[in-house]
Length: 212
Image 1 (cartoon, rainbow, N blue to C red):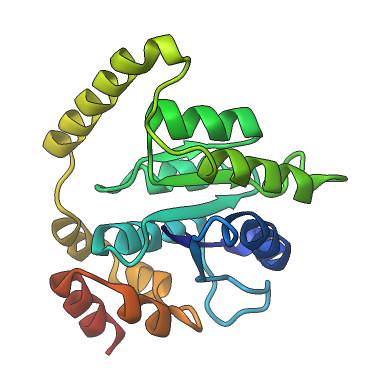
Image 2 (tube, rainbow, N blue to C red):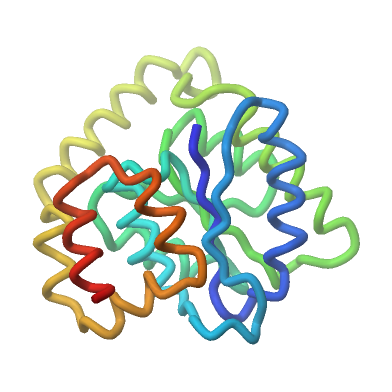
């Protein structure tokens, strides 16, 4: 699985510890991590949590990433931003139980985490335990076991509803403020990471024109 890490500006200083915790857990599982930043609070490219949603949608819809890890102070703003876009199902994860149940009940492709609220002593351990539960036990298997079939049925219904209520990404992005979208893909290493992994030619061409 190709996992993307995105940090918005208020929690950019925590990018290193979050990346280390993620790599420690998922690298032995055979997953790959691309760090899209922000890398530091002083980065030239400043991402808001709304732009995290735009960037996550571009990565997931293009196939450049299979899963996105992001967050903000509480995780709430990032979750709302990501869920505003087609092709993204983002859960709010504070602890390992959230991570496990989101993976198995909701079977999404992104999580938003609180990187300020409750992030004190042992914060890196909570991240590691969350990532273990998120990626170490499969996805979409239902929970509890006796609820497997109805939970899988509910997820299929959700997917059908979202397919009918959300427009394709390339119909959405041109309606947004171009500066807002361009800022979402202005990260120092965006181009080298994105174009090496993007699987959708139309999205790639749109991003190329945006960056010109």
